[in-house]
Image 1 (cartoon, rainbow, N blue to C red):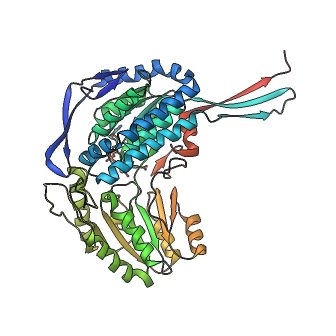
Image 2: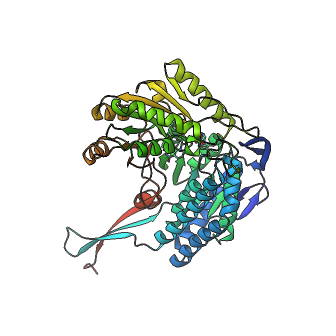
Image 3: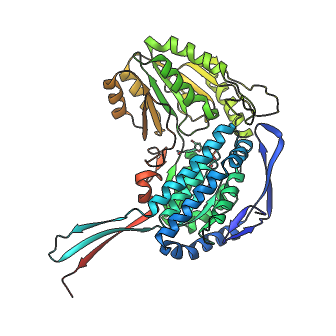
Length: 478
Ligand code: NAD
């Protein structure tokens, strides 16, 4: 795995070395890698294009077996991957291992997708004709991923792409290349033919542009601003896109909520995994009758978490993943206070046994829906409370934000839950449940500008990873 780039079945060294740092301990280097240049990225795209037709024609059962083998290898190596993930990204060890197992399940499910029937048969308006609607692989898929799910996120993109007969070039975030390298090793060991899967390390724009230009489809997950840039680039070549982007997710807590449950799901959504989930709960919209009791309980929970080194068994919340995000989080709190938010918990850095990027779970209160702190994604362990009078005002506040990824409600009234579920503009709605994670058999994603194009998982994966063909057959002609 020298050099950490995997192109056409070979491990390739690039010209630009870089290292990664453990966010739990800035004095520890996790790995050394190299970035490739434009020529190697073009080579990876060309290798994928050469390899794709044979992969599409590969025996169906054999293709399913290979994907299943990837799942088995991921499961077997989950403790090792989980540990690397914790050192590289800062998730706690159980979270890291859990993510590796989820990655395995994505390949396991995709193995089943390979052998599922794809196509429909119709009668024709013309006598003696039939109409077939079939699905064909899209071709070469460019996959670009962020740092917050270093093993599961590339996995569900690659699993979907390979299942439907595509070849893939993956560019992971340079903050977390180690998990992508391990995944590439596993894909190689499982017997995926050379060129069908390729891994390149590089700077976002330069590498991304070549990939977008040369690909048939782009599956991208990252921030909304980056999403806009890749979509603009893709417009030039009309490359098919599916984008999963930022969120500013709201949880509505009504007077009739079960307070214990409301606090449990709100604290989980806001602070677990250091708030670094695209579906993390950042806005807590709470009606007047329950507001004070809810805030008091939330502040207590925030203060009770053990924040520390990701590999310490007692740690509940690991560090912020990188210095840039850490500084942005601290500035976010300062800016929120400047516009009038009060600090009910946390707000700053905390000390632990190592020199890490530790931030206290933070609760801001007395905020208004239109304030910057309720309009901009923080992507850290920070949630702000908006006090409202009733469900109508809560629905209005929840929808009064450009992001439309996920939302939730805590209530004991089925009527209120159903009203909110229908009125929410988000792509995913949770009722009395913590914020959305991946269930790989259903679509995951948001509405624009939190997402764009067909969702990449579940029943909608085929929409993105294949092209449809409608064939009219005059079976009475000859
Ligand atoms: P980011 O947008 O900075 O980077 C994402 C990826 O894009 C990285 O690999 C980066 O190198 C690459 N990139 C950067 N500029 C590029 C360009 N011009 N062209 C092509 N590629 C480019 O995001 P991040 O900081 O790594 O991740 C955090 C963001 O991801 C948050 O906004 C979060 O909400 C979002 N996210 C969304 C989902 C979802 O499913 N909706 C899931 C996870 C994360």
